[in-house]
Length: 488
Image 1 (cartoon, rainbow, N blue to C red):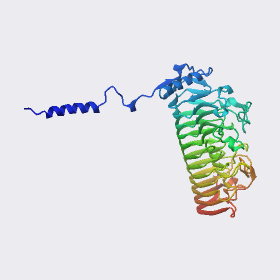
Image 2 (image 1 turned 180 degrees about the vertical axis):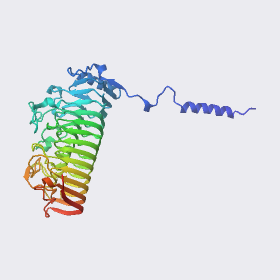
Image 3 (image 1 turned 120 degrees about the horizontal axis):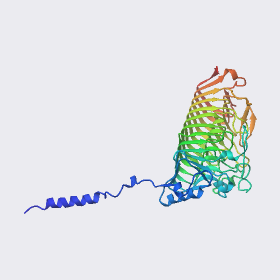
Image 4 (image 1 turned 90 degrees about the vertical axis):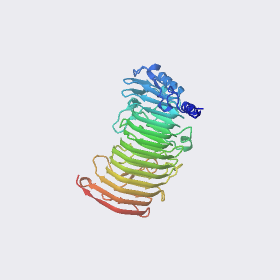
């Protein structure tokens, strides 16, 4: 009698193959195409005259309801809009040659001034903007009077929701979001970034009424954000048009960005929570304010920040820390940075310092925070003024390192020198002679391989490489320090 083993083996093999092999008609989830929703299919005309707001929002909402995907803005059109609200799972794909244009009427924006953005995402996850196109805030439409020193701007302060002369809409805001990605897009002409900081910090920095900072891109209480290949342009003579403000946000990476604007370019701030794990690399910056600035909103701590391979040109300040509200800074590294700083009109904060580190109380209701474990490595600077390091009392500045630093000093503008700028708060302007490095209230400073060069054609008044009082500056170490004149 023939054995039944071969038959049994064939039956088991057939059964296993049925279980292990998925049907040919079932695609693998990883290869599922991304759903795309064109705003044109929802009625957007993109003529730059008629508002496309409801059509754009309909496409966003449909995309979100379908589980997420991309909302596409076809090329060659200008999409005029009031505030549009980005939903979880949705990425705006603004094609190259397409522009999303923000409206210039106050009724184009929500009632609360803190939500005045052209594009706004609130409490969303897995959101982004890309495509190679542009978002335009029409900032020049908000200029009341052109002034080469500093433009005078329109202010929407009649309702009392915000005060002063800085009530204008912003460009892009992510508030309370997770997994944000912004890449390959242009942000141009923001009209505004922040209302003035109130002296009543409990009101100004509350969770409901956080300080709304002026920027092309504003991150508020966000986690896990990637920003890359971003181009930002703001009018050079207009105030309050920051590049990127990182407020109370953590785990942020910024890379390959080009920022050319009037106000601060990359600006971490802490109003309602700490800022940690921020990396900014491979960027080009030009600004009439600070290229990189921590503060001045600094209620909570900053920790674990890295700024590497950055080029700074024609700026009023290079690397700046303005700690005014009691927050502490620890573990910040600046490396491989080329800096050029010059004087501009004194209505702008700054005095051409390539490096500026200060901590002092904003006002009588504030206190100074500490700054420690600060590193400047492989820094090259050409500037009209020197480095400034200052605290209001001993023990607040600790353990600074300058390693492989080349500082070249010369004058090429006609603005008056001989002033220290402590703004905001503190002492305002103070008369002081120019020096290579001015130090006040520091405990622990290591300088290793520093070359300080002075132009021989503009050396008048530049006769002090290191300016400090031994009673307030302690534990200085100099290894391979050189100072001398050079021919321009």
